[in-house]
Length: 340
Image (cartoon, rainbow, N blue to C red; front, side, top):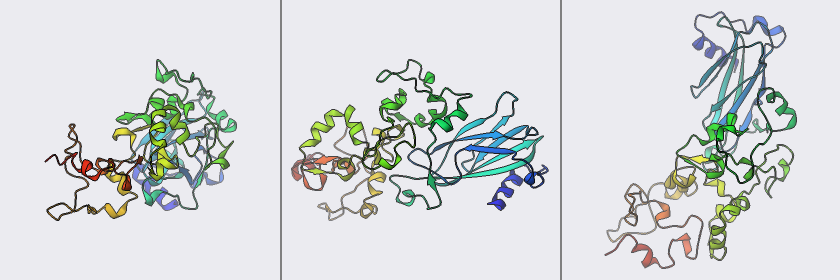
C-alpha cells in the first residue's frame, strides 16, 4: 500500500518535494473521520469522505479516487472539516487523501472501500477484512453539524417544493443522478423507507444507525404498491426475490438508468442468476429447430420497439403457470408474437 501511495504521489506531484516521511514522527497532520478504512458500501456506489487537517502548515487538501475523480480544498481558518462524495465502482476502491503545503505533500493517507452488489455474484460479498460501518449516529453527526443541519426536516408524505432544502440533499444528491428516479427518492421523502426499523434479516443492526432500512424491504414497498399485493396474493407460483420480499434485489429503490428502476437491463439482470441462459440457448425449439432467442431481437408483441427479453415470456414476480410464464396457456403466450 505504501508503494502504491508513493507512486500516486509521484504521478500527481512530479516536481514536488515529499515531506510525508519527515513529518511521520510529528503530531497528526491529517485525520480522516469518515469512512473507516476497509469499509463496505452496499447498494449505492457512493461514499462521502470527511477529513480534518490537524497541522497549521496545511494549505490545502486533495482527494482523488481510482475512478479519476479529484477534488481540492483550500484550507480556511474558519472551517475544521472538508467533505466530498465520491462515485465508486464495484469491488475494491482506493481513495487517496493528501495534505499539501505550497503544492508539496506533507501527509498522504488512503482509504479502501469495497462496494458490493446484489446482482453481480463476483461482488456479492466483501472480503473478510472489510467490515460494514454506519455513519448516522449522534456521536458521528456532531462532526458534520458544524456545517450541516443533521436533523430530519421532511414532512411525511409531502414532497419538498425545493428539494435542495432537504437536509439530506447536500450529501446524498448523487443517488438520483440517473435517468429514472423513484418517487420517494426524487422527492426526498427518505424516512418513508429509512425508518430506523429492522426487518427479520437485519435485527442485529438495530440502533447502529438512525436510518436503518428493514430487510426484507418488501412490506415497506407494498405500503405504496398495494395493488401488487392484492394481485400477487392468490397466484400459484412466486419468484424468489418477490416471495422473500427482496424487491431491492432487482430494483434500485433510489434511481436507475434502466426502466422500472432495474439494477441492470432485463436480460443481464436475469442471467446474473440464471447462468444457464447466458449462451442464448433456450428450452423451446422453434419450427426451424433452432433455439428460441432470448434477446437481441425486437419483441413483436410490443409497439414501443423494445428488445425481446426474459419478461416477454416470463413474469418476474408471480404466475399461475409453470416456469413463471406470462400466460396460463402456452398457445396464447406464443400467439402474442406469432400472430399467424
